[in-house]
Image (cartoon, rainbow, N blue to C red; front, side, top):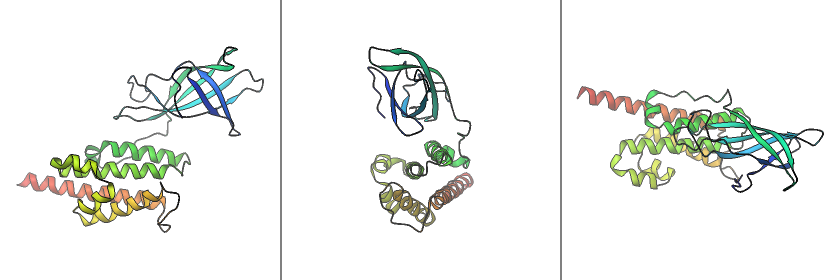
Length: 236
């Protein structure tokens, strides 16, 4: 949903799925999760119109654009007065909150240090799944996998960072990942994740749960490798 910077018109859906238009006073300028000033990214909006037709109550879903945060939060707008100038009802920002269930998924300390973005994206995909957004959460898990593998390879081949970031996930798994265990689990996770982004699936035998398990296995093998190298270097 695009932001209209001139009138700040906001389109929201009601319970029946119909679109309604309101004019908001402003976008949130402070993230309720990280407390930083932001230019919030609008995702979608839902709400209701009072039975007398004189008021709106709108919940708009935003995302913090900061790379270190990217948390989803909800802004609540309520009506003020009717504007005959543009025949839209003004609504005013009353507050923002982060859903209480939006928690960071737990991963090994080595994974958190290696790829914090992976942890954030995986956590957001899990939140989407818990909200029954099963048609979009798979895309999030697939994105998380790409961040994990690229950060893993950048850490391993720091001199080849540009090449790692420029190549596709499939090519990197096939050509740059040395560990057979990582190659197998990450490769399968990539295939299942790609299915989640396409119109037709090619791997009907593997599900969304399999995708999550494969990503978890990939983090497990990466952690094993990182810890093994750490202790080997320590002894040497």
